[in-house]
Length: 357
Image 1 (spheres, rainbow, N blue to C red):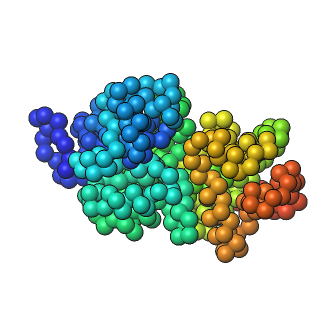
Image 2: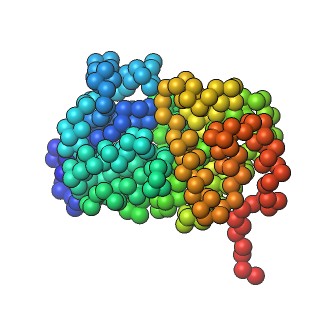
């Protein structure tokens, strides 16, 4: 049920206007969930943040700081944290889900019917093991009556809470939903663009994590800018080739959710997957790299799922093959780029726009 400001005129269901004060639920107390909570509260909405850890709940409610994931950043005091999932979502108009892919389905099942009739937005950039389901597909499978969207883009959480200029993409076939999310999150440092290609936007957000690990490894090995730019560009070709085979729109990969997110994740020390790649490049084992990070890096799980699917469908993915061989088969990191140079196709641009003559 949409909460109206005092003296607001009644409107038809689903058409939320920018003047409305809404109840926002954020499921997931990690860095990006906290950043979304901060933006929503600063924009005047009522915000509840669901976190499993009571210590983190106390930190948000008493100190207005996520001391585990975003230490040193003050969160808007309008954000209220709670470990009771039902209490957080029961009166929400909009639910943002920002939890790791491995826990996603379980949490959705626990929320169950309480999500009925609500706008539900996934911000998780990952692929479920075994099923190869994206998070929007899990939502469709588990829930019957929701308005569904996906939020993705070059959104490093520390920069968002530091109020650095940032843009993101809300993807949905529901135009009114896109307008609502744009209204809720838009501010002078956070811009929200829309896209109807839900699958492409979501798949781009998952795939780019693989290539951030590759670039992190390269950085540890001291690769130059020529090599770095080559890796990013060939990553874009590879991920778009894979996604289009699965039905995504190739043009999506030229936008913020595609090349934008890829560049940010492959070049920033704030990227969790880049950090994992750097640690691997410095000689750490996968377990040591993940322990050093202290947060979930979706790229390793995504790599396993994409490698299996690419093999099944016969999709040419030399970077995925090379990274997989390093992490799971013990091959030398130094062979990754060299192997790609020997195996790569000679065509530069994967998809060309042809005008009729």
